Amino acid sequence: MRTAGFRSTNAAVQSGFAMAAEDLLRLLAKSLHIFGSYADGWGANLFCIDGSVAPDSDIDVTYIMTDASQQIHIHQQVADGQQAGFRRNGCEQIEPAEYEDGHVKAHVRILAPNIAFEESELMPAIDLILAHSCCRYPHIELLEPGYRTCMSDDIMRALREEVLGESPRCHAVSSAPPGLEGSRLRVSTTLLERSVMHNLTSVQGQFFILVKFLIKRVISSRVSGLKTYVGKNLLFYMLDETPAKDWNPDNLLALVQQSLDILVAMMESSDSEDVCMRHFFLRDARVFLKRDHDSKSRIVAAVRQSADNLLSDLKPFTESLPKFSVNVILLSFLSYYILSVELLECSDFSFTKHVSTMNTATELCLSIRSEAPVGSRSGRLTQLLLDVERQIPDTAQVGKAYIRAAALFKMACHTRAGGRPSRCVAGLYSVSEDDDNSLTVASAKSLAVDKLVKTRCLGVTAANGQIVDCPKLVNEFGPVVSLIEKHLCGFKVTKQQVLLASASGSRCAKIYLNNASEYNSRSAILASRLRYLDSFRQISAETQTGRLQDAQDERGDKRGGDPDDESQDNSNDNNAQK
Image (cartoon, rainbow, N blue to C red; front, top):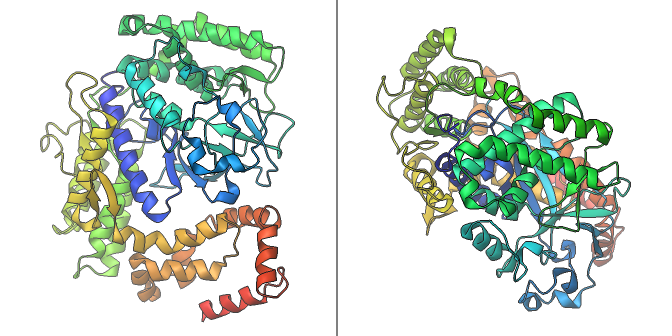
């Protein structure tokens, strides 16, 4: 597993790049955050850690609605005094939400907690999760004075900083226990989970990968019911109860078997057919099985079967691991964008040449991303690499260097052909093969930020290890993201407005529009930018008819008109279209 990149150093580098990407996203909208297995560093790909996201995984992007009218206020007694400084924000004057079983009672008009962006050719799947901010966390038993735990000092320090610090980022998402859909918001502990995942040792991370593989690929092929989150919850319980000396490679399979035994015991301890186990951080909350799951007895039997046959159940995992050392973290989607930007800035690079080069680069990147063994494809990979290198001008040196290094790494011959990849290439980092824990996520983020700053074609500026500006990114996507953000807040946004925002901000769109004769139509050029507008429109329609009705009435009263009268909006839309 170490050879496949399942090491804390690889995980830290991937998480560091995710944190840098989050900085870039927050230039577009401050309420955006990157969570989930990709940001955790562990579990986005169950066969290696090389910066890639498996086809059956995704990147979680959470939009936290922070305006005061949408904030959830959790009663001080529920928080049990853990937030000593909460009175400074004045929320004690507001009626608190009713909290129970890890959920707060609220009238929820958006039943789906996420919007799924399907995987595209070069971009991994993305889940956009809508969340309400909370003023504080509920009671966390783990942080009680006198609580005894085997978790490391680094983990406990990070947890205390998040929960007890000046600005806790607790939030709640639209998810409810069975039968209570539409009336509850689930309090999310994703930031606490990330604090733990960023401080795992290699063996602890490997344990999580094995448990997640068993749940996702083995047990779930036999029965339906277990969520992959169960694997993370089991990890937390094992970290809490297992002394540091027991976390060693020789004990790995025994620890996995022990965790499956704990899962069986927790499922059998509840009389409810829908309950799987207790939530680790919110001990009063329950983790439920999937909807329409098989009988709990069948699920328990399937878990026991895996516990009794670990070696045979893990054989497909061991056989799928790469046979060469994974010591490079690749970020294909970022570097592909860099190549496109560089080519657009080449004054002597025509539209036709741009399309031709990017088509070849796309084919090469897709071949690099493929999970299939290189084998007979090595000849085609080599030819594609030669074609791309011939077509890309020397002025696009960053994108050119990345694609070359990625292709050679994919063919497992990067040390024979051209030496080790340069550490100065954005989107690619050559990981040290030194001892584990040699690099923290904070240090890895600083390295990632530094690389982005040195990638001059992006125009990134940073201060104190934080990205503070990227005009090209903001100009390209800012107008569209701003309109989508208004959509999420319930305001009317038309397709015409999004089209104009795309054309005004996107240099790529301008070039394509100026060469429309070489393309099918102008509308087709921007169609990809509108791919998910209908999803956002559905969300905004629900909010417009629900939670923001009062605000709309108030706006209607102030302008002396009917709040449902859209004539003013239509007039604005017509002016914008003109």
